[in-house]
Image (tube, rainbow, N blue to C red):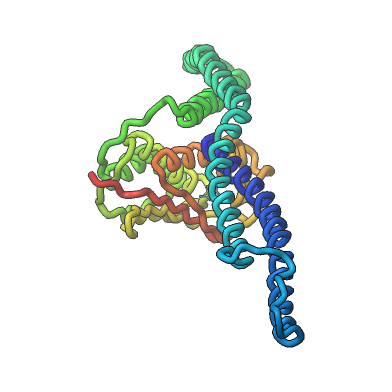
Length: 338
Ligand code: ADP
């Protein structure tokens, strides 16, 4: 992300420097060429006048001018020189801009690193006590002598703990994908196998909602980190199930398009409106704030993780949706020579 910003800043440096230089060059060029043009017009007139009015002896030119250098030649030379200066300036300003952009982004990089480290440490620290509380609650709930009210309270606490545990796990996962040092393990994989693994992972959700998956994936090879690709597919399937009514069908399609592999997850769910479409890939963004997490569990990190996974695979993710009718998430992954 920072590297991209560095390139963008460099582009701006070059653009600004070049615009200033072009304006100056135009001034210099017009400043030089105008008197030269006047001069050559004047000497032309003088020549004609001298032929008409002074037959003999021929008058001297108004200003001595070397015979081998004409005003047009000077103009061309100035033009070439200015073009050359501007070309050199593009390279110099690109180099300097890249260096300066790197320098100015250094503090941002440091802050981002510290922030990531903080999220990672906090999530790690939270996981151990949450696991302990969860185990205690589960064990306590096994006690049949607990009265109904105590059971209700403990169950609600358990739900909260599970929610926090999942949140800590997702934050860690997001952090892992954001941290460039954590290289993924790229191998050739079967797309069909990945889709089937993801479907198996969401079977409880499918059963609960009585939603079916129509898996139309063509088996082709996909180059990438296997667990990340399964996770990507799982996130899109989980969302398709979560945001669909009961007994709907979710379809998975794939095709080869040029040098890309296209995978589509099509649902007949509630759809996403235009305004939300621009933001659903942001962290913690949930389209309908009124929809409480008790109705559709989640915290708006799924698509942020999905988009990071796609980014790490040099791919692209997009969504098309008609509000109230359904959504189609399309992932495009570049095919590599396997
Ligand atoms: P979460 O599902 O945990 O809220 P996500 O990042 O996975 O978080 O999704 C962000 C938001 O995008 C969701 O809150 C939901 O409003 C919207 N969304 C994602 N997938 C779908 C879908 N298939 N159909 C409708 N809305 C969706």
